[in-house]
Image 1: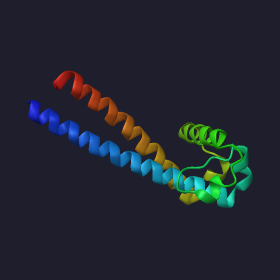
Image 2: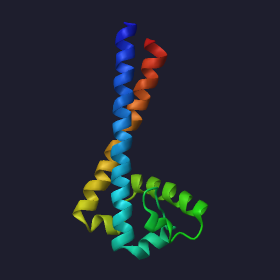
Image 3: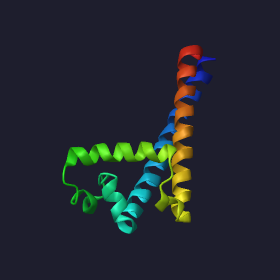
Length: 120
């Protein structure tokens, strides 16, 4: 029983990691699209940037403010679809991938807690 629970926990951790990678890729693509095609919206959102986008961070006036902007921006994308995303089919797919991977990640974390508490 314990071997099965341990194996399940390892599988959940691997799947969680894949969800994080998927959501990060989707966010990066959405951010890059907002920066390149919807610069005014990007400025209104607080000039969010992620690691790996030096051309974006170069334009951010305050590094700490911009780091907070990416968190607010990512959280807002979970519950609200910006107009520029709704207007572009590829952005809608990336947003859907972000939301699904985030929801699966939350489900997997809850599942791993269940396995840890009740089965180990």
